[in-house]
Length: 566
Image (tube, rainbow, N blue to C red):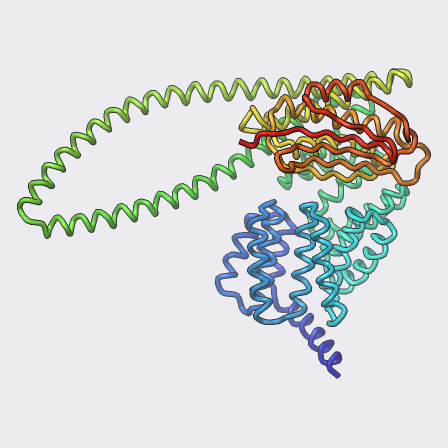
């Protein structure tokens, strides 16, 4: 009887909620159309007077989701926490279940997969004891499928949970869940290299996004669509789709998507031996990337300016209050105090005049310095653009030579190409970093790993990277990047011999003042052999770091160095 009552309650909740709450529907539409700033203003406005505590929870969810998509994780987490406080007050198990699902997605988006798994486990505890409505259950299965793709890497489980989510999403008319369930299914077939089936699903996904005016989702779907076409060697069709998608992204002001499609167009023209067009789109991509970076800088400056104005107003209020107090004291003071005040006033005027004089001179000097600084920044920016363009041109020229080279020369050229790309990645980080003397080694090495993504996929190699954030000198960062690049190349070329399961592990962390660099693979071809790679040895000498190589159980490389954190 108890469960019957719960089921009836859930049924009426779904009907009333989906039919009446147009406020939440409109907010979700803003997010679907990528109007995130408008969505944030909209949710904040309605949070001032929500119609109920349940609506308040959903408004906080929407606000957190919008911040999450803007990569503002601090504000996103803050609003998720506020929603949980309200959920705890009203003791609503349905909303608590949805909260854990949303937190799982919050952690998954940040690649914190273990935390995401813990949140879904909390949701599972509720699911075992409470009937959950189909709308929330669909989102739960959808996020579970995403974790099986990214964390567990089990295609069959991804397919199983995606299909479960898809059935419930269609039943509840949850377009967002329908879209991402189909996208997960398409990804499974793409990883199985069943490109025909994957493209069939992607055609359906794009048509679905168009019919439901899901513009951001449509642009995202085209990224996968172009990738599958390129991998199945349908280059002309991939190029046509990329050109359309780039124009679509430009019209809808999806700058990030436009950058990705311009990069795809550049690569496709190159593969089609149209070097002139490839270079043309390379320049366009660099211009768009610069524009994207400038927007991010403007947003940061706007936020800082707002904070400064607020602090300035608070200071002004304090000054005004002090002036009022001083005026009251002056009125109540006797004749002697009045003379003293007059003397101080005259003295203040003299000091103020002197300060004004020196400030005027300082302002004039500062203005000249600003002009010189602006000129230097412009020259530095131009130099960086030229360096970046030249590095990209070198990459294109080397890759062009790969097509004409023999197999032996190809291996050498590929090694050179990967090392040039590692240096290019360092330059990109250095250019974006305000401090040109140091660089965050974690972000740099993760980008080095990303450049190997296609090679890992082609060779079915699983990677596990755990890199601590640490600011180190730029010249040392380059050697770390080259060292990691050389180790990855050696593993791909020499380590694995007819193995079904191939894995590479890499850890860079700081422990008790020691920088630990640990790299290993499970390759069997070098088992129990004594090796000393020449280039690895030279790089370690440059870094002034002792290292150790062990081949008893796969290839294991480790080294450590004392660092100064001051």
